[in-house]
Each structure stands twice: as C-alpha cells, then as structure tokens.
Amino acid sequence: MTLAFAIALALLAAGTPGHADEATPSSSADRPVYLVSHGWHVGLVLRREDVAAVGLSRTLALGSFRYLEVGWGDGDFYPAPRGTLGLALRAAFRSRSSVLQVVGFDDEVAEMFPQAKILKVDLSPDGFAALTRYVEASYAVDAQGRPIVVAPASYGVGAFYLARGRYRLLDNSNTWAARALKVGGCPIDAEAVVTAGGVLHAVAPFARVVRPGVLLRAADPPAVRCEAPG
Figure 1 (spheres, helix red, strand yellow):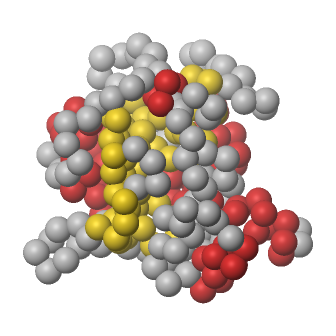
Figure 2: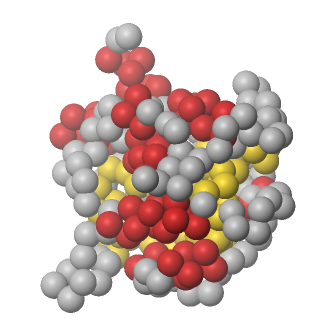
Figure 3: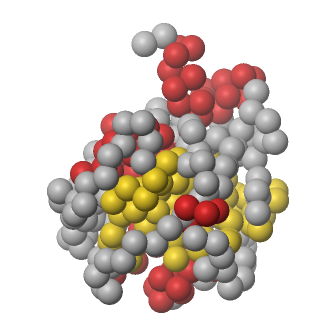
C-alpha cells in the first residue's frame, strides 16, 4: 500500500458530517448505539436518555436533545471547514492535539443523516455504561474538571472539545469508535480498524442495518450479540 493510498483511505478518518437516524425496536433492556458513516469517518449516536441514566455529565452539556453524536479526531483536521492535504499529512504524522465533536439533535437518525450508511448495535445496560465512560474519559478538562470548548461543531448544535489521546494515521477516529464498541462488550478487533468501511464491516455481524450501502446488507437478527463487558 503506498503512502498516498493509505492517506486517501484513512483521510485521517475525521471527515465532514452529512445528516441521518432511525429507531428499530429491540429488547427494552437494550441500549442502542448508531454508527453513522460520514465517508471517511464514523460517528457514534447515543440516546440522550441512556447517557443521562449512566449519571455522567460532560456529554450532556448541550441541553435536552433526543440524540447525541460523538466523534474523535485530529485537533486541526477534524474541525477544519475544508480538509486539505497539508492538514491531512500533519494529522497523520505530526498531530498536535485531538478533539471530540459532540452534536445534539431531535430528528430520527436516518432523517438527520439522509445520505449516510447507518448501522445500529444493541448494548447491554452495563455495556452502554462502559461505552459512555469511555467517551467521557476522552475529554480533556480544565483545573475545575470542565470540558474545554475549542470550536463550534461542524454542523448543527454542538461543539468541538479538547480531547485526550494522540491521533495517528493508523490510530484514528475510526479506531477510537471501534474501541468504544469493544469496551461496550462487542466482539471487534479494534486495533485492526482504520477506515470507516472497516468499522462498518467489522460491526456488521452484530448490527442491524438501518440504511445499507453498496456492500452492506441487513442481518436480522444479527448473527452474534454484544455481551456485557467482563
């Protein structure tokens, strides 16, 4: 794989958002997590009520929206209005910081992101709590323990927050999303995931397809389930 091809594939996995969501009934004990592909980057959509039930506050700061989308990426490339090759190269090899983007919305997921490929994964309550703690731990905080806003969100109502972790070409926002699912009890090799497509295909055996792409087909019910983390 050439360097240029690797960069093009990952495009630093912090792309710009589109718009989407939908809710499919499952067990009342399940906590749904939606994976929304924005091309080169996968965001995680959580129900605000589920996040609130965990009792953690940083991700709830936006207000009383029905859903929250979270994503992690390079501190320069991810918030940029237009990604450039220079920003992409710096993010891949000399990243200076990382950020979390959190956006709140009320529309159904598929309506919010009408062009996106979307998968839905059901987590146990304990698995969802573990995933939420993983997201909360990704925030960098000030001396008072408060999240640090660095820029308005790239769409909708939200913001970019200074984050923990070092962004790299092969340890990027898609790897971050895959780790969140692994922490939540899903059978995924997070360290092998680099691209948005890699996330979707790794997740497909234990996900429901809300909106399929060319290579995504619905598996209902999923072949395997995410279990409560051990």
